[in-house]
Amino acid sequence: MEKLRNTGDALALETEALTKVYGSGHTEVVAMRDASMRVRRGEIVALLGPSGAGKSTFLLCVGLINPPTRGHVVIGGVPALDGPRARVDLRRFRRERIGFVFQKSNLIPFLNAVENVQVVGELIGRPTSVARRRALELLDALGVGARALNMPTQLSGGEQQRVTVARALANQPSLILADEPTAALDSVRGRQVMELFRDVAHEHGTGVIVVTHDHRALDVFDTIYEMEDGVLTPATAPIAPMGTGGPVSTRP
Ligand code: ADP
Ligand code: MG
Image 1: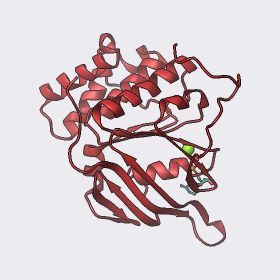
Image 2 (image 1 turned 45 degrees about the vertical axis):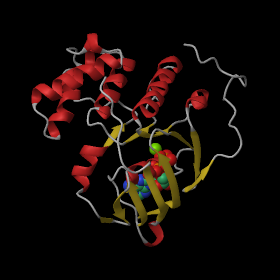
Image 3 (image 1 turned 120 degrees about the vertical axis):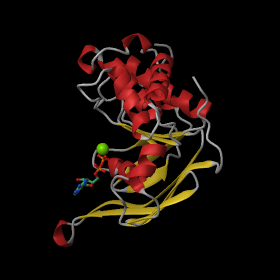
Image 4 (image 1 turned 120 degrees about the horizontal axis):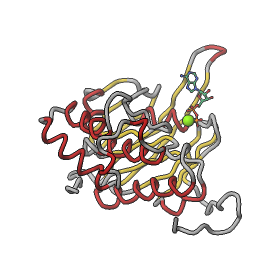
């Protein structure tokens, strides 16, 4: 697989005091307050926290999908948002620099696996033959090359999620944002996806943020943040695995 390493600024992401207020008056919800995070290129970050803590709100702000009420988002050294104000062409920036992976694979149902990945390259203006070659390389690298011509419904949950990851990598993003990407997978498959993100981060210099509830795979991450009631903090104490209470094997 071709190297995806980015050049330039050493930070994949910097957010400063991101605050998001939904609604107004008595329906006002402060979903996130003063959230600051720095992610280096090549760093993989876990974001933990209970439901309703503001984790998705944070990712949607950082992903330039749902801008903050206040605060700054700088991606790859480029100021992208000052509060709700865009400093770049957000759609283009998102398409070219950010890869998203959501809980459900949300593949396009009428495109096969390779077409689902290829379309991302075509959207940023690559010739079809180039986009297709890269899509096939990515599927191969993710161990689903043999499934390239299958439709999404002909893929297992784990395979679908791998294709989704390939799609998130297709534009050679400097930042990957994943919102509970392993929630629909069993623990072995879930762990494989986390390890894949780590390898992408470490090998290609991509910044990766993964929202997860799976405490069994936390050893995969370089840095762990927690969010509660809209407040983001770096985790200070080691977080114990849930369930068995003991250390978890890293072997599937
Ligand atoms: P998490 O992803 O940690 O579960 P969310 O970011 O989805 O948390 O939500 C944080 C808070 O913001 C919750 O109280 C939620 O109800 C509220 N919220 C999220 N999205 C909206 C919205 N579009 N409109 C109003 N309130 C919202
Ligand atoms: Mg969420």
